Image (cartoon, rainbow, N blue to C red):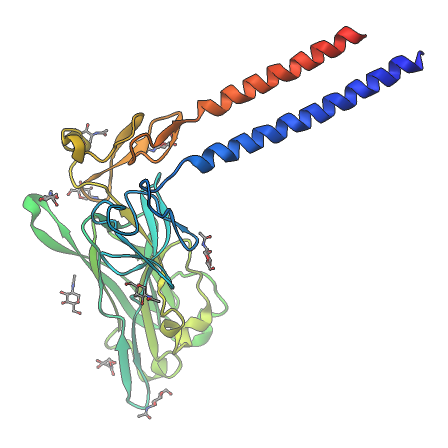
Amino acid sequence: MDWSVLMVKGQKLLLLVVATLTVQFSITAHGSGSSGSISIAHPGCLDKCGNVSIPYPFGIGNGCFQEPFNVICNGSGAYLASTGVKVLDIDLTLGEVRVQNPRIAWQCNYTNGSSSEGGLEGLTLDPFHKVSYTQNKLTSIGCATLGYVIGITKGKNQVEYPIINSCFSFCSDASNVGDSTECSGMGCCQTSFPGNISVFNTTSVPFPDIYDSSIQSFSPCSYSFVSASDWFKFDSSYVSSTDFASKYTDGVPLVLDWVVGNGSCSEASKMGSQYACQAMNSECINVSNGPGYRCNCSQGYEGNPYLQGGCHGTHLHLHKSTYDLSFLSDLLFMESDLY
Ligand SMILES: *[C@@H]1O[C@H](CO)[C@@H](O)[C@H](O)[C@H]1NC(C)=O
Ligand SMILES: *[C@@H]1O[C@H](CO)[C@@H](O)[C@H](O)[C@H]1NC(C)=O
Ligand SMILES: *[C@@H]1O[C@H](CO)[C@@H](O)[C@H](O)[C@H]1NC(C)=O
Ligand SMILES: *[C@@H]1O[C@H](CO)[C@@H](O)[C@H](O)[C@H]1NC(C)=O
Ligand SMILES: *[C@@H]1O[C@H](CO)[C@@H](O)[C@H](O)[C@H]1NC(C)=O
Ligand SMILES: *[C@@H]1O[C@H](CO)[C@@H](O)[C@H](O)[C@H]1NC(C)=O
Ligand SMILES: *[C@@H]1O[C@H](CO)[C@@H](O)[C@H](O)[C@H]1NC(C)=O
Ligand SMILES: *[C@@H]1O[C@H](CO)[C@@H](O)[C@H](O)[C@H]1NC(C)=O
Ligand SMILES: *[C@@H]1O[C@H](CO)[C@@H](O)[C@H](O)[C@H]1NC(C)=O
């Protein structure tokens, strides 16, 4: 074995390792550089409020949003101007916005005769936002509690009518609930939230005839609220709690669906400059929760379909790595020449 050949091989190997690391590093640097340069906000507008991303059609201030997606950004966070609810997250691709629902309906009837109630104001969204019927549930907590939501929807000929969803929660004794973490009817019940709803009230009432002084003595209060199903975890202590609502004065997470226009895709695409899918390589999506449409970058593209030039090809990245790989095989080729 000729040691000098081995040494040359070793140096070449080292060079190859260093070269590979350098190439990998440059791929990473290019990758983050290009996605960072894709602006999601309207040009010249803020794209964040605190740690919440604000992509167009949402926007902060005049000229930065499309009606009714005005966002108020102040010291305490981001808020939908049309409703005043706090924004936790906006998802462009799914057409969802996660907000804080401050409406926890509650009612307490103590054995000493005093009683109180709250959270009955209801939530009124603008018509471009609907409460997601797939991501939320109505939850009621109590031991003879009827919880219900009354929502207003529009039927044929735009005639409004109410939709009611309800559930009943029961327990005759605190020990019935045990240390259950399941919301399954004992001390806690859940039901789905109806579709096509922008306006609703939540109510929580003790059920007459069943709600007696023995239940009242260990479970004086009941609570009902609509929240994201992935958020709520039942705890048996809630059944006897007298301060559940005051623990969540900021509200509970709620997922809203939004549309960018109220017509269907076929109507919207005839609207010229009013058509919201402004980017080349974007497409229109009909929604299932109420009338209206949203936009999506076409397959193979990503970014913001609501902005001109907003959808960028993901194939760009592929070109880069193809180039880099051929660069690597050139190196290997040079090296094999040596042996
Ligand atoms: C934003 O910050 C708050 C508190 O600082 C945190 O609870 C929340 O998870 C953050 N949200 C995101 C999207 O990072
Ligand atoms: C921020 O704006 C929201 C919505 O208008 C309001 O409820 C909240 O009190 C404001 N917070 C501050 C610190 O101004
Ligand atoms: C009745 O009991 C509740 C809970 O213990 C208490 O907060 C309230 O002040 C009492 N009311 C009266 C009139 O004693
Ligand atoms: C329970 O409290 C509510 C709200 O204060 C009151 O309207 C209702 O009459 C009370 N019910 C009973 C059975 O005491
Ligand atoms: C919403 O209403 C439309 C008709 O107005 C109906 O076709 C659709 O099924 C409803 N969606 C849901 C989730 O109820
Ligand atoms: C919700 O309650 C308010 C009063 O608190 C009432 O004016 C409104 O009509 C109710 N809305 C529905 C959908 O029941
Ligand atoms: C859609 O919105 C426009 C403008 O806001 C309004 O004039 C029209 O009546 C709406 N159409 C429906 C079906 O809600
Ligand atoms: C959207 O719905 C309209 C009317 O319901 C229909 O004509 C059109 O083909 C649908 N468009 C898409 C992209 O699904
Ligand atoms: C939107 O585009 C993404 C990426 O191409 C795709 O995964 C998603 O299914 C599309 N959504 C709809 C509703 O077509």
